[in-house]
Every structure is written in C-alpha cells, then in structure tokens.
Image (cartoon, rainbow, N blue to C red; front, side, top):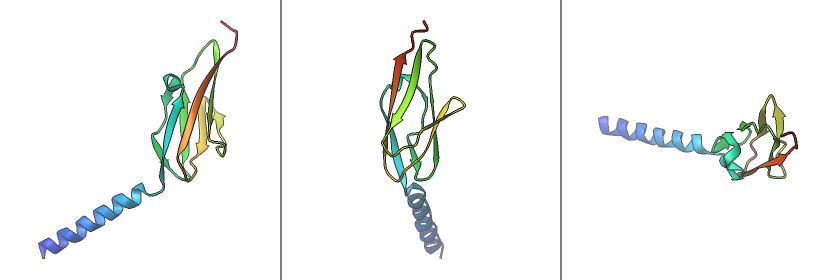
Length: 99
C-alpha cells in the first residue's frame, strides 16, 4: 500500500513540474548585456516581463526586441507581455552629448 501511494505521489509531482514549465519561453539579451541590471531568463506566455537597465548619465539607453513586442518604458523600467515564443532583446546606448 505504501509503495502504491508513493508511486501516485511521484507521478503527481512529475506532472506538476511538467505543467509549471509549460508555455515558458526564454528571454535572451543578445547585445548590450553590460547595461542590464535585471531581466528574467524566461517567462510564461502572457506574463508581464520587466527589464531594468543601468542609468547612463551621458547617453540614452534603449531596449529593442522581436518585432511583435510592444515594449513600454514605465517609471524607469521596460515592460512587455511575453509572447508564446522565445524572445531576443538588444540594449542600445546612444551618446546624447550632455557630457
């Protein structure tokens, strides 16, 4: 009896782990990683993803991604809704001539 209960619990645990990883997609920063302060490695489709970049006093920092991403800059943090596929992000720094 104990063995069968253990088997059932094991199967349920594996099923739970598999379900919790379903629809998760990777987030990869392909350029400008040195300006990245915070970014998740993956997210579920539909999740709000928040990316924080470093503040550069004499330049403007931009975050770009896949064409289907609607990236918003809100209160110093970039946000987008995770699509149902992997995402690649690029951080671009452009001097603004203020230094």
